[in-house]
Length: 77
Ligand SMILES: [Zn+2]
Image (cartoon, rainbow, N blue to C red):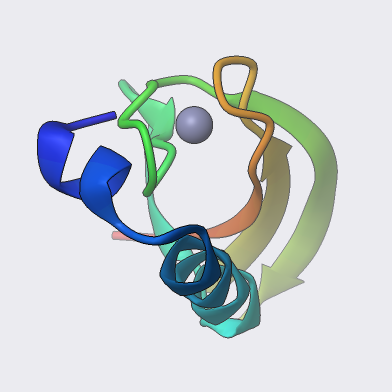
């Protein structure tokens, strides 16, 4: 976690986490996997892999460093 994030008041950090969890999700990369949007950890554990919807597939992740649950989006091609 970078210094700016550590300086955030707890309330703002919680709002940030809720915004992340409500969002479409971070980009999924075959090489880096799901990258935690809060602490930047790569290849976060996949807790659920969705089916392909058109050229898009969602995954759910849980960060092993900070514990954040977040979604990623893989786009084919
Ligand atoms: Zn994290």
